[in-house]
Length: 277
Ligand code: PDD
Image 1: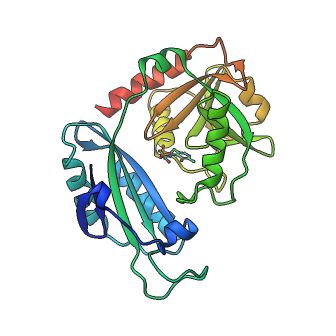
Image 2: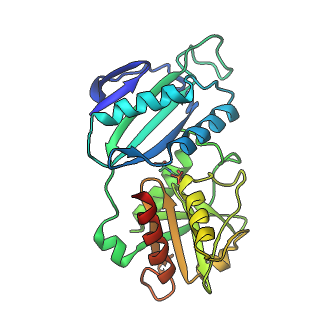
């Protein structure tokens, strides 16, 4: 696989950064994950806009103008021509003597790589996935797509350890999001997802689902969702750029709805697949 690092394309295995990189020492950086279908970026401009917002939130200057990002990322995906891909990019504050305070005059580290993007397996599409609820132990700036993901990693692993695929997070008995996904619920034909703010990442997939719901007359609300509403929902979905829309059919070991992917999920998945092409 080919990677981009600080102005160069090189084999991924040869891409190296210093142990003094602030991404390594402090998790001091931000990232994006962008899907590529049939050789085309999906909603690239929106991902680059969110990158800009994350950079601004951590007081980093965007190292590249948007057209340069586009050029570099296009060149990167050309190495895997024809394949569906997930492009990962990250910007860290750069390499400097370890000190919490920002260093003076340091170049950010700019890195990107592309991995094959596997569609959700036929089995999971048919059966759905299981999820567990957990207390949202993360920090108070979850709108920033920070590379500091220790809490997300621990929460996801807790789900895996009990045979589930995702941890759905609750802050003061209210739904926030998944460890690496946004969450929607369906109750009596009405779609709902928690409102934007510092409790969750403003997902590009989440926004598209809200758009598709509006265009297709599916009632949809952005509102506070209680833990009780979550566990009593007819349908629960997880959304992300890499997994698209995933139906959750068990939560904390209990069946969601009738225990199979719901009708509204089927409809939204069709709308999403049509939009993609
Ligand atoms: N994660 N919330 C969190 C905490 C996430 O990490 C992600 C995506 C999302 C969904 O955002 P989007 O629809 O823009 O992908 C929500 C990526 C895929 C990752 O970390 O690999």
